[in-house]
Amino acid sequence: MKGIISTILFGVFLTVSSSFGQQPNILWITIEDTSPQFIGSYGNKDSKTPIMDKFTQEGVQFTNAFSTGTVCSPSRSAIITGVKTYELGTGNHRSNYAIPSEIKGFPYFLKQAGYYVSNNSKTDYNVANPQDFIAEAWNESSGNAGWWKRSNGQPFFAVFNFDESHQSRTMTNPYDWYLENVLYKLPEEERIGESDFEMPPVYRDSPEMRKQMARVYNSLKLTDNRIGELIDRLKGDGLLEETIIFIFADHGEGMPRGKTNGIDYGYRVPFTIWFPEKYAQLSPWGTATITDELISFEDLAPTMISFVGGKVPSYLKGRFLLGEERSSEAGKLFLSSDRSDNGVDMVRTVTDGRFVYSRNFMPFMPEARYIRYMEIGDIKQIMRKDLEDGVLNPLQKSLFEPRHPEVLYDLKNDPWETTNLIDLPEYAALADEMRVSLDSHLSERRDVLFLPEFELEKISEYSNPYDFREDKTQYPFEKIYQVAKLSGFQNEKVLRQQLKFLKSENEIERYWAAIGLRSQNIPMLLPFTDNFEEALNDSYAPVSITAAAILYELNQSELAIERLNQFVLSTNSHFSLMAINYLLYTDKKEPFIESVKKVYESESSDYNISAASKDFLGSLGLIPNNFEYR
Image (cartoon, rainbow, N blue to C red):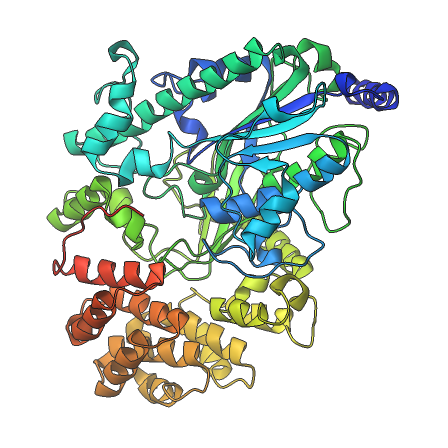
């Protein structure tokens, strides 16, 4: 009944809103790299976030809000376009592949509805021609942008991004930098000490780790202060009671195992909508309330456009959370995680809020995989030293080991995702339901990121991945997916199927067969050395590179060494990155040191190639893992 009344009232509201003053302003406050576990109003008694807590407690607190990516640029691509990254081709961090001209940054449609739209100031939208895309979307996007530049009385949609909780503050930048730019900006009475909080079980509870974890708490306290300053300005301008406020993070916590990982810790975000009394009737949830309704970033664009009375484009498939056209609640959400900087990965996830099921398509890549922006942080170096010293418990050690192809976590009873339930008989029916729903969803959306990334670059030269994926002749998704689904499962039946697909006429099927074989148990592959020697000459480079990596693990063949060194030095950045990434996880790196040194010394203009080469040499102690400003 509450929802029906809210819808009726909103319809009346739109009908009578002919003047600027009667339309609500909308303020979005986004914070970076933050999981709900570290926010006071989400149950952390050690956190000091009173401003965020106040608005959460007075507004609508969402306990099941999820990013559609686990690192900033894919996440922000989904927010600004309203289109899932695996439809648009924007899932790989800091890429710039083409999107269709009709897909616009959603504030464009708010402009058409009469709103002044401003962004202060982060973009990172992960699309080609970003400056044109940004200019079309916003009235202004800059460090000076804000509601104060609108026409007199014009309603506004204003975004402010606070980076005080970004990974750079919590783990990557040097500790001295953190002291100067975070801790010393807080009054002493607001600082959180190194013994003033509980350590999450995924990290070793040691003085060295506590020193690093305290950075998270103090960075969030500084973030909270900055939010308070912005709210004070809004209030000082007499606009607080005229403005609906959203406060949310762009993805999960910027610490090892959180950000960049396709589990709940990477996806789930704190999310609040605060309605002033004047517009309280527009909330379908009420106010001063908590809801477990499932929402994702795919929902934000259609919600905002619909809410201000704009015409919602047909390509938007997310829900309407507010307004007269409010959608029925979702039973499940579908999420994704792909390459982050030089660390390749591919995870697809389904969650009902209580349980999360993730499918790891490249499980040979560990959760704590080599990503240069993390490797230079003190906490990652401490964790690797603890691993070397044998002081990590099995859970903490597992971050550095190959993953299970499937994980299923009960988030109600296991919020830190410490126990994988996938093989327990009592969860078999649930796991199967999750698998089926994920398969159905990916088939419906025709996930374009099952293509190797260099294919997206080629497609962007004449079209775009979004349109390409719809052509069933060019992109036989169902056939490709059937091969990809085998990846990670280690048994002879699967192995035989993968060897068969390694000879397929379709090069993408051969690619996924090779990826799957890389995930097999190495001793099981020994009788099939000839198959990999033959695949070294595959005309499709990703197959040849992967076959060489497998063959090298099997017998350190001179042929494999030669082929891998050739690809390390390839002028194609995708091929070079693929080869170096494989070599990062071998215990026998010596035959490749000189080739990787050449890449390192070439000062490649490609950030990811440079980062991968530094990770390789840094893992051998040949160069220091020094911080470098990015």
